[in-house]
Length: 217
Image: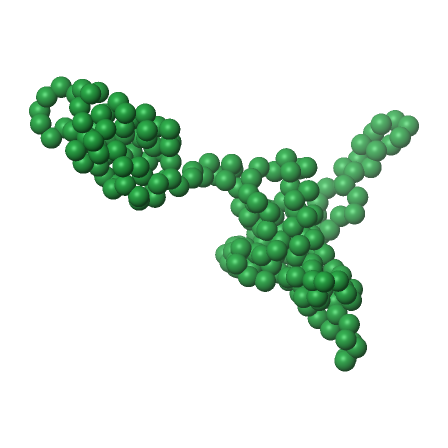
């Protein structure tokens, strides 16, 4: 199962699993690296991307949402199956990959006949463990959070700056991470003490930080 998910994470190419990454001779210090062996393409790159997107949706808003880790995009699939016929016992699992933007880690959590308060569903008992594991591994490997990696900017609400001077409005907008663009309705020299008569976007609209608010004086 891990090999299957890793193949999806690797863009559809099967890479033979390794148990040993390198061998170090304790006497000479000589290091022998065990290189990854790339095999055949199993699925197309396009199909792999679609699968990752679906797995991301499972964690973002589906049965795997208990596997979420703040700041990281996680992909996964929960599993719940009966252990035999009419035994009343279950095998519960969560398999996941992270981060979706550039996968580096794949994990599989399998619980045999869980009997705790969370029940026996994969999303209820296995996915939370996945969250704990990813929550430890990703920071340990110093993998940047997705919003840091992409430079994603936060949304802020545009304030009401009508009636303010240009100087006051500029300071207010800059404190929110917004830019100011001044439009003069009359031909004269710009003045920081002029009063703003109109603004675009209007107050209350949410926009990304770094966006310019157009003001008329």
